[in-house]
Each structure stands twice: as structure tokens, then as C-alpha cells.
Amino acid sequence: MSSWIRRAGARIVSLLPARADLKEMGRDPRRDLLAGLTVAIVALPLALGFGVSSGLGAEAGLATAVVAGALAALFGGSNLQVSGPTGAMTVVLVPIVAQHGPGGVLTVGLLAGLMLVVLAALRAGKYMQYVPAPVVEGFTLGIACVIALQQVPNALGVPKPEGERVLVVTWRAVEEFFHSPNWTAVALAVSVAAVMLIGARLRPAVPFSIVAVVAATVVVQAVGLDDAQPIGDLPAGLPAPSLSFLDPGELGTLLAPAVAVAALAALESLLSASVADGMTVGQKHDPDRELFGQGLANIASPLFGGVPATGAIARTAVNVRTGASSRLASLTHAAVLAVIVFAAAPLVSRIPLAALAGVLLATAIRMVEVGSLRAMAKATRSDALILVLTAVATLAFDLVYAVITGLLVAGALALRAVAKQARLDQVPLDRGDHSAEEHALLAEHIVAYRIDGPLFFAAAHRFLLELSEVADVRVVILRMSRVTTMDATGALVLKDAVEKLNRRGILVLASGIRPGQRQVLDSVGALELLRPTGREFATTPEAIRAARDHLETTGVLTVPPARTPSTAEDGALR
Image (cartoon, rainbow, N blue to C red; front, top):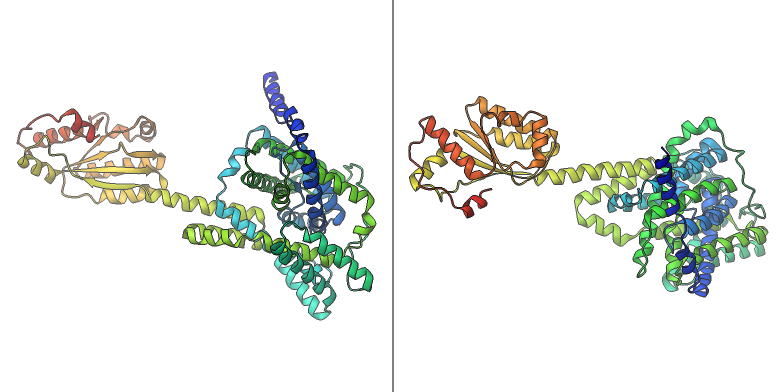
């Protein structure tokens, strides 16, 4: 027990920041400070918008950006990752807030953070790379649609209707708008979104999100538009850490949402870190340390009134493009936002909700990579199907069911593709050691089949059907040296085929069984049909000679063999 504790302790210590990380932050502090300031300007409206969308208010988004952004930057596995509230996480949190309130978010964040720390200790980071690209693209498309639909009430200037399903809430908001239109809110949302989208094409380096939000706020204040509802009062500073909302009785009901939050935080953060690596030269993130950092961030953020966080791809990309080279840039981003929380809360509280809705509408549109979607759709029908099903499941259900659906469909299609690789081919008998007359006699009574590829549950029954159709022969030789893998189902089907052929009076011989397949065959009793009667052989020439002896014994073949095959011929028939 003590040795296990020591190993676990050593593993946790290995995930902590090293001296090299601190040294890296001192190489080019000027560039990192400038990059951090730029990212903070971009992150401010997003943090406010995602906080509002989560149902906990703008202050929750700011607290998340500050606390989670700082901890994930310090303890994470990427030098360039920027963490905070994201649209994908908001999609998961909305039903939690609706059902359990702020206390439910606190509990979910704590549980999810602990799960991420455990995953880091178990070295689970490397397994996230096995999520298929169509699943990632599908839920990204679905998330973008959900984020856009979530902004409809604020963009239309109507109170958010009751309901958990985003499609239902959106429809009710549209109905409410037609009863009492608020064109001021619509104009603000559309204007902010248009400025961001057009500006990003013309001048990508300029943070048009903050420019558009500031302009919208100034116009509303100057003209005195009563229809433009502001964010509302914000606390000047972060709340003190508190566990007052934690209800132990809710742990059971919140376990499944916590798993969803942990899975999303792991997947999105590692994906974002991989994107950052691809945009730079010489940067390589540590997936386990990234999970550890995100775990600590998600434990701490709800304690300060925030929501669970992940690595943010858009903010990370801005960080890289503006020249960041170390964790100092991400820490600067969190520090600048903290200054805004403490010093500029009254100004931030005047920002119209419709303007933030416009920011998130533009963000949702920019999340959709049309080129990637087109490439996936053109790749294969399977990829297109996985993408569409994942996106639709995200809209109709939630992100967890969407990812599970995508993974199940991807797995089923992958098994189907692998199963198609399994072939049962009839191969001609070698005539190098037989005369023409004897070879003709052998060919009339012996048939050899070569099994290529995997023999497992997805392909086994097709194999049985093909093999059972053998007719008008006395001996069947199964050449198994090219079987790549075999499971219990494949072994049982092989046993069944041998028994059926034996009942029809057909002798079955096998050659080239690999050691790895022998255990599976032996476990289901398939080898017992071959071993006692000497029907298993190391090479195909040996099996052919045994078949010829059997035909001689039964009086079918009387021509003597001409010679023994050479070493080269023997090897070619294995």
C-alpha cells in the first residue's frame, strides 16, 4: 500500500510545473505581455457572453476566465494554451443550471476537476487522439448551431423562455418577438456580428469584437435607447472561495453531468493544444499535464463563482498569432481580465446583452470550417454519415450523447470495413512435385482455401457460409498463415465449419496456424478436431501429402508421387 502511495505521489509531482517552465517565461517577456494583452481584449466579450449564456451571469464568465485561465496556464501541459469559458461547455451547462441552479454547477465542476486529475495520473491523455476526425467536426458543427440558437432570445430582445431544449426555447423566443418586436436589439446584434465577420476578413489582427461591443455600448448610452437591455450590475472583484452551494445529496444525480463536463474539458483542451502545436515550430504539449492543469482549473473556478472551463481554440490561436512564446502570455491575459473585474465593473455592466449576442453569433459562424466539412463529406460516405449524425445528435439531445453516437457509428463502420478485408480464396495446388496426371487427379478431389485478413465476429458468419458451400471434393485444406487476427467467434465458426464438412464425409486439414491463434482455437475446442487425427500441419506441402495419403488409403488415388518439393517450393506454399 505504501509503495502504491509513493508511486502516486511521484506521478503527481511529475505533473507539477518545472524550473524549465519558469525559465521559458523570461526569454521574451515583452512579446508575451503584448500577446496576453491582445488575447484579454479578445476574451473579454467572449467571457461575458458565455457567462450570460450559461445562465449564471456575466460575472461567472469573467471569474472563469481569470481563475481557470491562470491555473490552466500555470499547471497545464501547453506553453501557448489559453483557457476559459467556451461555447461547448456552455451547451453542457445550460440544462445543469436549469435543473440544479448554481449549486449544481459548483458540484459538477468539482467532480469533473477531480476526474481530470485522476485521468492525468493514469496517463490517459494519449488516448484522446483516437477520437475520429468526423466526430470532432460533427460536434463542432452541432455546438456552433446550438451556440447560435442560444443567442436568439437576447438578439431579439425578449426574455429567455422556459425550457431545456434549445430548439424549443428558440421557437418560443421567435413567437414572443412577433408578438412584441424589439428592432433595437436586432439591429445591435446584427451590427456587432457583421462588424466582427467583415473586419476579420479585412484586418484579422484587429480585435473587432471589443471594437464592436464598445461602439454599441457608446451608441446606446449616447442615444438613450431604452430597448437595449444591459448586462446589469457586476460585483467589483471576485467573490471569496465558498462551498456553501455544495449539496452532498446531489452527488448521485450530478455524476453523469460531471462525466460529460470532464470528457468535454479533456477533449476540447487537448484538441486546442494540438492546434497550437500545429501553428508553431518546436512546441509540443504534454497531454497528461494538460489534463492535470484543466482539472485544477475546474476545481477552483466554481469556488469563485465561475463555471467549468476548457482550452479555447479561438483564444489560443490569437495567442499564437500575436507572438506568444511561453505561459507568461496566458497568465497576462488572466491578469488583465482580473484588473477589468476590479476596476471597470461599472463600465462593463452597461454593455447591452444584444451586443454580446452578436459577438457569440459571429463566433458560432466562425467555428464552422466550411473547407473541413466539405473535405469530410467528400472523403467517404462513412465519414459524411458520422459527421451528420454527430451534429444532429448535438442539436436533438446533448453533447455527450452526440459524441457517444458518433463513436459508436464510427466504430461500427470501421468494423464493417475491416470485416470486408477478410477473404476466403480458393488457390491452385502446386504441381511441381506431381505429374500432370496425378495433379489432375488431386485437383478433382482436393481443394485448398487461403484465409486472408481478420477472422472475427464481424466477418465470421460470411466465412462460414462460403466454406459450407464446398461440394464434390474429398479433402479441404485451410491455409491459415495469413490470418491476421482471430477472436472467439471466429474460432467457433471455424469449428462449426469443420464439423459440418466432416459430417458430409469431407476431410479438413489445416496448415500454418500461428501461435497467437492457437490459444483461441484451443479454448473453444477447435483444435481437438484436428490434433488427435493428425490433421494440423506446419506447412501446406505437408498438408497436401497427407491429403494424398488419405486418397490413396481410400482407393481414390493410386499414382505414386514423383518427388519431394524443394526448400524454395516448400517456403512458397506456407
